[in-house]
Image (cartoon, rainbow, N blue to C red; front, side, top):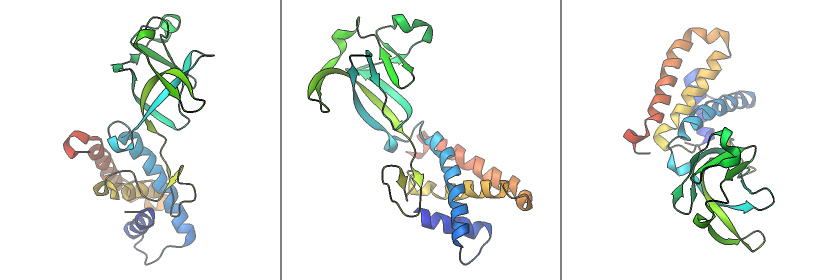
Length: 209
């Protein structure tokens, strides 16, 4: 389902009106995006189709690796084929060879004692050969819109498999009812559905995502 269809579905489930005004569509779109943020936080833990793999080159000046601007969540970091584990901040000046620290917008590793493990290749930005790490991460969620003007930050199609698209409508209804006291009697019903949807989406192993 695309965003236009999700807005129509949300409207049908909430007020069952034949058409939705421009103001109404904007309202439902806001609630769809709130629901999308909740579902995306769950999907970031297991939905493989949203994962990016990026080789990040060392910044010799800071002796660190800069995080990508679109980072939402780090999944894994590798040096060569060795997986790194998060280090304790107390060990910042003595990071173990198989660990890393994230501080501000950079990743710090033990560049001295584990230098033999690093692979090097040409950095395409300036054609200089540098050591690098491989970052596997989830990028920031795109804003749901009816008409895409910026394909980098916007999308008119949810990232989840089609059988899960209607969960967004349930989530939008939850936020819609929550924001309107006249619908408070419907809150318990839609909250149970919304909570069930989130649990189902989180159960990636059983649903083959």
